[in-house]
Length: 347
Image (cartoon, rainbow, N blue to C red; front, top):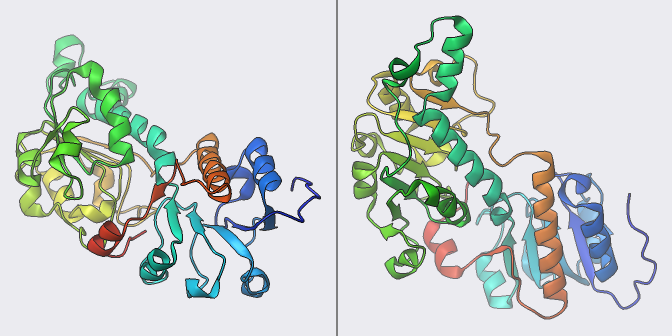
């Protein structure tokens, strides 16, 4: 239900076009009411906003809240101050002119940090399930061929004091780090877009990719997908992993040579916990479905009902800040150096 706020005479216009997401799944009633109280909301429906409706308001709109940028040249919007996306990624550089945004002072904001608590929790759960053989133990017990006591732990290990590697130290990784603290894991981090000094402020050790892969018993792959990091973790890199080491893949399959990963799992070289796949839904005949030493999840880490309202809260809070003349405080802001250096952001 659209809140009724009749006094819109002095309010700035905000386009609310969240399709493919539903407004009701993205915003709590309280946050949606706040949004309508601070601005004149244009559209605000679950269906995709028609381009002619955007054309009618483009000269007056201050903020566009959208799941996909499909509005052409940002210079067409003379009063536009910010683009807030709700898909979880920055718009592709082929669809949005970032240079024009930076030149005109238009902020481009991503809701990606809203997924960090749920995804980091899932990453830890998958690591525990794979390391302790929780899923395979359950399957064996149900089939009546379980091994009891010490025999049932012949191929498992505990997380306590294990060397951990993290690839990509964004919002998910920074949320995961304190969850790992009780396990006393020494942590090495590879992220070429962060300075070593900044990485050390989080009480982790910066390292190159080869070192992270070679020295870690558990490796969390949390790097955001870009044009330049496709299959960054190649077969050669995967073969650097220790025998029996665990890879937890919860960012995007894009960054890993998935065919090589699958083959190494069948060879018994490594183990894995995987929430993301090259094709989703995963084909029924994909060999990863039967890979040994593997825990699988159907891209569930960040996708659950109440979790999406974190997006709405961030969007509402930062819209309020922008309309009040303050910088956004919660969403991830596109930076010229990272956007130009990383290339197009992939789905």
